[in-house]
Length: 227
Image (tube, rainbow, N blue to C red; front, side, top):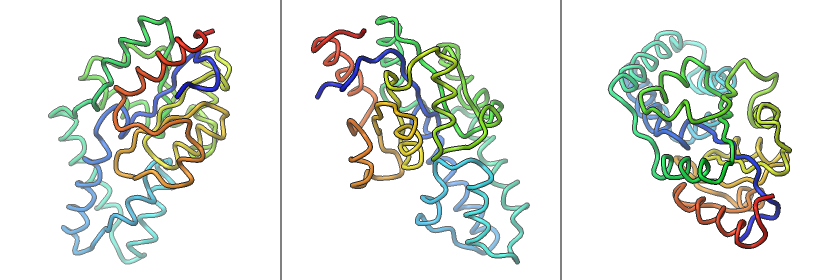
């Protein structure tokens, strides 16, 4: 397949797309819930993925109920995730190769994430790839979080790019909804969430790894150029 429009810039989600944090957070939440005598099923975790922190917390609080010590749970999860970050969290397959390819083609890249700037530095800093993004849009940089389009529109502005000519790469349903609402050509690389009929309607492609995005960009170039 060929993208419907030339690609002038690429906007990446972070968690679950660039780095394998979604699985780390899921494991931490399940373990910490059990430590407090509660269960946290995947159906609840899946509702939380891709949401801003406050909205994600609200889903968990609703599930656990008012008698659950959510502050203790949240602190325990944070400690486990910090330990994992200190140990190093792996980049997802194809990240470095895709960034190399974008740089070779002169296509700027940005991050649009629901995480904080502190979390971005903590998570991506050890990998050495953070400096390869021209812009990082994180929590606090926009009014409404995903699934609203605000994070992706803010990233496009920082790249001085037309959103319609931006390629958005996402792993979550809420992220895909946000990127599509921003008018971007959206590709889903699923992590914990499988693609649904809705996702297939909103995306121009669904890939297994970011390696496949390289071929898609090349197909667009061969089919009509990048500009």
